[in-house]
Structure formats: structure tokens, C-alpha cells
Length: 481
Ligand code: IMP
Image 1: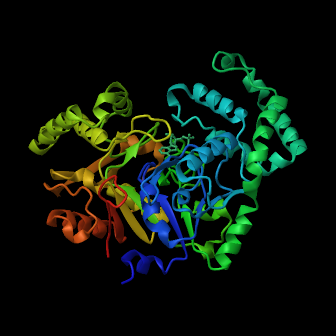
Image 2: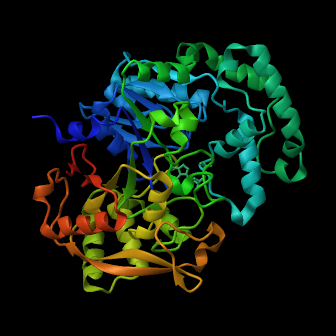
Image 3: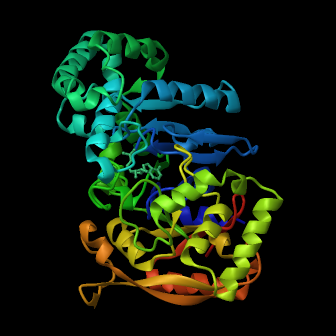
């Protein structure tokens, strides 16, 4: 009998996987589940700010930042033009991947026209964040904003310049000349090391050129040719709708086209070749860095400090178990504060950033936000990750409406991001399930209340929920029909 998922995905020669919330939805796990039915994995957005944890079929752990998760399953990997490229970090990741997977890797293509990171991007980002002061975005410090901005200013060195030293040298000189007044400004001197001379940056980058050469190519053309030849392409998103530079909570966003629409911009595949997508939503969404988060349970800084100050709670063992059991009891008795609920989910979900290690703040399942993300991505399917986090909770608060300027907003509409603090959230309590659903991979094994929960959510979202994550293990995922 054909695999259930195979039957569903057969109809989609290309498939986009995008995030619904503010990143860290577990896109890697969803990608891992569907990858088997695709030949090529292509990244279309983000850069070294992303962090996906995936496992090889043999159970070996791979953390990818720049290289598509497809590497773990030996798929052809494409780093599209929409991905911001850091040569040093790529080579480091490549070496780490080889250490895990062995030296025989599948073909990897880096688009020769992707924006190339330089130390100037990092310095520029440090400068911007310091000037913003308390309004800082809380970036991952990977130079993502400057990579996009400098590209748009038509000043970016490109990956292909690595084999054109003269061109690269010129681009670095101009970039340095333009940013020099900033680097030399009085306010900046105290903050960071002096900016390196363009000649030194040239030397640094050319030092990577030889190792990169086999991978740099007209990746967009190769990708399209492969698609025409009948190969199936999975398009891996990074970050998420809430962090999309155009459709997220600007300015508290990343700088790429993280929503599904970015798949065409970031790979060069035509819109008519794309369409099918899975939008990945986290049962209890999280956010790191700053910016609006309507269903957030606790104050951002407090949630982040809590993680930093209590590392022992994030280590498996008696202390963690007791902490969780105590809070779970309070939650079910109805006496837990929102801060305590946040702490429970932060510890239970090990909510720490894969790239920065920062604590993630947790929010409630937020249907109005998801309806907005659905409006922007118009996905074919939803995937709901970490459903197991609701195990043993008797009554689950769910955000079902946004009240703004005295009215409940219609489905798909959100206020402008600068008005989010004026949103009043409407909450309903949904019946939870007292059994643990950890690791369940067959829908029929779910408790009745868990099935009813999914059905109700699906009804409100009006998009089929195809996949449901039930735990960290690779096979802890349900394919629904
Ligand atoms: P940047 O992408 O480093 O410029 O950071 C901008 C915002 O996006 C910050 O709030 C980051 O914390 C957030 N961000 C960027 N990448 C990720 C991610 O992969 N997961 C979660 N948040 C992210």
C-alpha cells in the first residue's frame, strides 16, 4: 500500500514549507517528514540567523543554519539567491556536516548572485542596534538587515565575486567608503573594534574562495532545469510570516521574504511552478528578540531572563520533573499565573534559540494570528507542531479573537504593528486531554479530546491540518487524512 503522505504529496511536484508564527515552529521536523518524496531541497530566504535541527535516517543529529535540511537525507541542496550568504559559516557548517554524514555529500549549489556577507555587515548591524537603544530589534547578530539593505542599495558584493578578485576588491572599497563615516563616528568607536581595511577584508574573503568554488554556480538555472526534467523540489523557508520583512510585524522582523511568496523571489522559480505549501504553526508560539506578540504569556525580558537564570531547569532530571509537576498541578487547579504558565511551557518545550541560545518567550495558541498567516500564505495544508505540549492539561486557553478599536476584527485582518499593544485578546477555554500523547504517530491512538481539539482548530482555520507533531523524536509525527 502506498504511503498516505506519498499519495497526498504526489500531486505537488514543488512544495513550500513556511512558518506561521515568529520562527522556531519546527519547520525542520516537517521538512524531514516530507523530504523523502522530493529530490531537491532549496532554501529561499534567511541566512545564518536560521537554525534547523534535523536527524539523518540513521538518527544522527544535524544542525543546519545555511545549508538546506535536505542534506540530512542526501538530497541535492540549493542555496537560493534569496539566501544571505556567509562564506566562513558555510564552510564551518559544511565541515561539521561532513563530520556527521561522512565526506560523500550530495551536490550543493550556491547561487552565484546571492548577497555575500562581509565584516562590514556585522559592524553596521552593531551600529544600528546601538543607535536604536531600547528600541533595538534584538537581532541574531548575523548581519541580516545590512545584507538585505546593502543589496537593495545595489552595493552588495555577490558570492560570484569570490572568483573575480578585482570586482570584489572594488565592491569592498566602495562599501567601506560609504560606511566609513559611520565606523569612524564618535558614538561608534566605543562599541566595537575598528573597521578592517578593504584590502584585509578582500584577503579574508578570498581565503574562502578556493574551498567554495565547487559549490558556486548559476543555481537558479540548475534548479529550474531539474524541475523541467521531472525532479521534485522542496522549498525550505526560514524564519516565518511574523518575521517577513513585508508581511511581519515591521520593524520587528528579519529582512528576508520568509513567507511562502518568498519562494519565487528567492529561487527564481516562476509562480506558475509553485503553489502548494505547508504552513507550519507551533501549538504554543514563541518569540525571541523584540516586537509584537499578542498572545504572549509573560513579559519578554522576564521570560528570557528566566531561561538565563535557571539553566538547571533545562537539563533532564529530577529537578526539572518536580518543577514541571508542581506547575502542571497549579495550571490544572486554575491557580497558575500567566508567568507560571509561561515558565511551564518554556521548560517543557526547552524553548531556547538554536542559533543564539536565547530564551524564547511563549504565547497561547493564537487563531486570529494564524488566520492572518493563512491569508498571506494561503497554504494547501497546515502542520501543527508540539501538540504534545498540551498533554495533561485539562482546560486549554486559546486566543480566538482580536478586539481592536472596540470591534472584533474579521478573520485575516490584524491591526498595524505599531498598534498591537492596543489589541485586546479574546480567549476561550478548550477541553484538553489528561493523557500524554508523547510520540504518538497514528491519529487513531490519540485520546478523543485531542482528536476533537484538532477538528475544532481545523474548522476555525479552514485549512486541512496534514501533520501534527507529538514530540521531539523523528517519528513523533502524525499524518492525518
Ligand atoms: P535578524 O534576522 O538577525 O535580523 O533578527 C531580526 C529578528 O528576527 C530578531 O527578533 C530575531 O530574534 C528574529 N529571528 C531571526 N531568525 C530567527 C529564527 O530563525 N528563529 C526565531 N527568531 C529569529
